Structures are given as structure tokens and as C-alpha cells.
Image 1 (cartoon, rainbow, N blue to C red):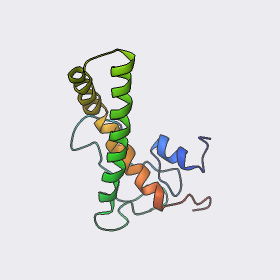
Image 2 (image 1 turned 90 degrees about the vertical axis):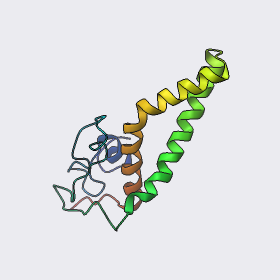
Image 3 (image 1 turned 120 degrees about the horizontal axis):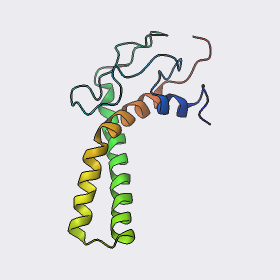
Image 4 (image 1 turned 30 degrees about the vertical axis):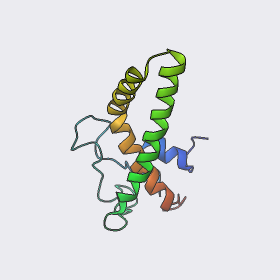
Length: 124
């Protein structure tokens, strides 16, 4: 399921969606705001241009929104049903979870977005 050649491999490993060799992000997972979503210009291995068109990653905002809503619902259900917290405490926990997971969400949204448009090519 996570072997080379699948979309899940590119997404989970943070690799180029075309060759699955080069790194997609310049930095590892970090909480530094200016480094979270910094990408290479091109793939170091196959030279795929990561910015396919101007403002390409604006669409990733919709993916990020979907991820954020899903996390909010899951955390709310766990807090409300699992721990029987009141509404205010549940929302505070949701805000905390979203702040902690923000770097992961931003990176995940971008790699998911480019994987929707670029397919793996076995021989690059």
C-alpha cells in the first residue's frame, strides 16, 4: 500500500509525485512559520517544476479546510462523548489541536494538491 509508485508513498514520505525520489519540501517538519511550506523550485531528481502555474497552491487551501473540519469534528466527538467535557472546554481543545497540527495540515494539503495533478512515471 505504501510502496513506491503509489500516491500514498509520495504523500507519506513527502517525495516528488512524478519520480518518488526527490524531496518535495526544503525543510523537515518544523513549527517555524516561514519554513513550514517552503518547497524546492524543481525536483532535485527529475526536475519537475513544483509550481505548475502561478498561484497553483491556492487550491490547497480547500484541501486544508477539509482536513481542518475533519480534525475539528473528530476532536469534538472525542472530547464531548469520550470525556464528557462541556462545550467551552471542547472548543478550547479543538483550537489547541488545530494549532498543534497546523504545520502538518499545511504540508499535507500541499502534497495532496500536487498529487491530484501529477502522476508517477516509472521511467523519468
